[in-house]
Length: 416
Image (tube, rainbow, N blue to C red):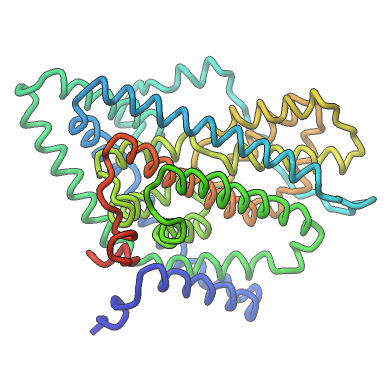
């Protein structure tokens, strides 16, 4: 009955839904917010997957990659590449922010900003260890879940045959979650349509005009980072044509853009990376949850750098060379410490503003359009995750011939 629908490549279904959602939002205005429940349904279904998927998939990854030396090498290379791209992202943010002519005067109305507590570094480190693993799962504390799942996987490897029954159960759990993921992802076009209709209908195009330059600066920096930093690394080390790479990951980018959540995009990213890019499930299950946690080039690298320069302009504050160095350093560190959920980039911007002595109240001027910006930041983040999975995976012999490169197939839902 729906064979014609599934005959359409998945990325085309998602892209068509996004364009239809934008058009609906423009034509219907605030009335289009009636479609928000469709987006909420999709987001809830995706969030339902995240905790069990991360838990089972990460354990499956660690137990399958039982060579501890190989695991250490993978982890070192993966985190190293995350840090490298984060530094490049902060430099791009500073360059774009400095080159933009913000104008002589900017008349903006501050939006209400709820203050957020920034925990000390010591608290962040101690909170990595869950006092109650079940509570961490219930509360969706991904960092704690990653730590606990890693310990379980390492323990299974050390016990060997003694833990074989439990290993079999957990591997079956991973397969079950992969199957549920394939089922849920069929809702993607519906969810993307609802989310985009709501965003455009709720904010409208007029709302964005006073902050147009700021929004365009963020989008431009993100596009540059995606095309030249990520694209350059894929071209040099990815073993796949650049055009095929971007075509293969388009569903991931579209879901990330519409949902504004790195964690929420994990199921789509996992499917695209393993099926379209040919990365092994074991490494994908390791790198993608890690990337959703610490690889935040858009939220922690580009955004704080441009926002700090923009807020300095609003208040007429001149930034010295040392301020730019502090912004770059803070933005780089922030990019590996920003949680992959909507809105928390504001916390890292607060840190950046505090470091260079800029008024934190300036956040209120850009808070009204944070959702619009967060969508592009998240799309940048998840693109980086797929790039690292491909580049590091290929360097370790964990990538088979990419589907997108060998057959030209670009439908990540074909197996569903």
